[in-house]
Amino acid sequence: MIPFEKAYEIVMGSVVRTGTEKIPFTDSAGRILAEDVTSDIDMPPFDKATMDGFACRRLEIHNELEVIETIAAGKKPEKRPGRNQCSRIMTGAPIPEGADCVIIKEETEELPSGRIRFTGTYNKDNISCKGEDVRTGDLLLGAWRKIKPQDIAIMASAGKTTVTVSRMPAVAVISSGDEIVEPQYIPGESQIRNSNSWQLIAQIERAGARGRYYGIARDDEDETLRLVNTAIEENDLVIITGGVSMGDFDFVPGVLEAAGVRLLFTRVAVQPGKPTTFGIHENAAVFGLPGNPVSSFMMFEMLVRPFISAMMSFNWQPEVQIFPLKEDFSRKSAERMALIPVIITSDGCVRPVNYHGSAHITALAEADGIITIPVGALELKGGTLLTFRKI
Image (cartoon, rainbow, N blue to C red):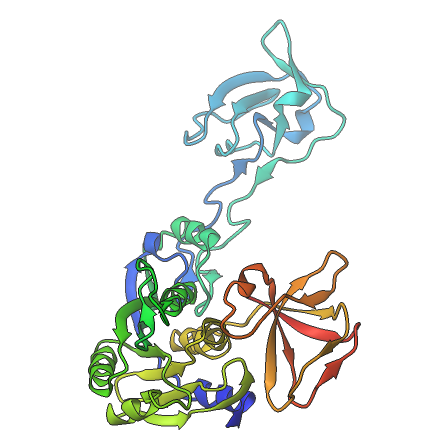
């Protein structure tokens, strides 16, 4: 059994990058950008009005002004305002040559003569100048970031219609055990529904990869080996849950070795999640996660999710905060690091949820996140500051 920190070091030191691909920018939200995006134009591309009003020369704003044309957004000005003249202008429209400010419509009155007069006491320019936001060639988006909706708008503004992104890892999920039945079936005596696989598929997709379900491997070494071999051949990463502890039918580590996987560890000093296995095959990395759903959830978040992100050259970091413990906490054994699901209380503390152990998956539904209790700590006093990790 190795410390969690050592397991994390081994996992992250075993990452193989997935490479890149080009896709339409419209399909890139949530993907990892694999190139710098620069602007091919100035933004804005011309001096433009930021308000509806009248474009004129500032030195004449207190004079009565003749309106010589109307400039709508998308229309090129045809006339240059002369002495005591102005152009009616809409937001986003180009400023006519010679004008240096826009009087907003709300601060003008129209005279019987058809001229307009400024009624305010102060007037901003109300002009956004060419290149004010971005110059041609400016860096807009740096590589190795997760693409957000606002980044899509930036790409569109820069004419970046095809973008290079990290290829999404293909991740296989296999459950194991004769006691497992699929969710659509009523469990028989001594059976349980398969919750792990679908939880993992959702976690994989949240991590930015493609999850592929390969079914339930029964407690048969040949069948399990066949599924594992197929999954390794077809994917970048394989996750198998169950069959990794010490029971008579927990033969997954042996099967992985038979499939050509070089096991790097088979036990981690963490609770829940002790029987976590990790190894490398020439075609794929392989995680063996515990069969209990809380354990598999926790170990995915702690080890698999950062591994998947690193495969795409993305330095994902969990969202963490520091909170005081609401009340005293104790546990029976301190030989392993503990991961405890907690809620954030109304007074800004964290308190463990009602949690019965690694099979109690419904406890995670009310949890806001988890806290980490270090090896050797049997008791913590209320008020102790702890690192809270959002899940």
